Length: 147
Image 1 (cartoon, rainbow, N blue to C red):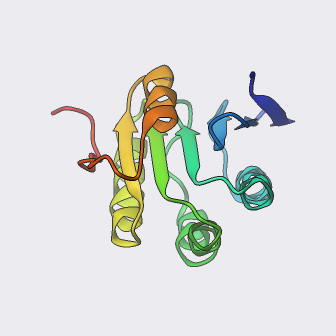
Image 2 (cartoon, rainbow, N blue to C red; image 1 turned 180 degrees about the vertical axis):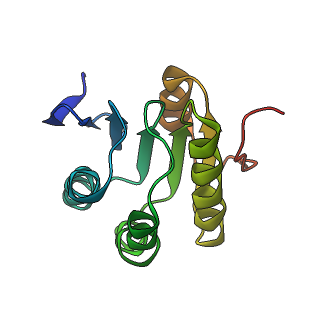
């Protein structure tokens, strides 16, 4: 089955993959503030309503997340999504180094909250990992591109 388009605008596209229970966003350019929160909150609503446990972040065209949005992620959004059953996170890292550092830092925080998170350069590989990951399969967390 193909992915359902939930939101599509100049800033981002948000999909739901019903066969694998994956919420998936792709940022089309640098995004922050209300537009950033709209995408993630819409994804959270789909995540909660559909009983998902996996999220695919494609941030290749994004950069570092501003401090205000980072604080919102850590104190508001992450706890809500984790409480709704978030277990697996695949992140396609931004092209810019500053954005990579930012996402890696957020992934380490996710590990501390019990998420299994892996970083990828290729969105197809990230999607494949989420489609095949199993709670009974040990997974080594990775949070950076190969050095």
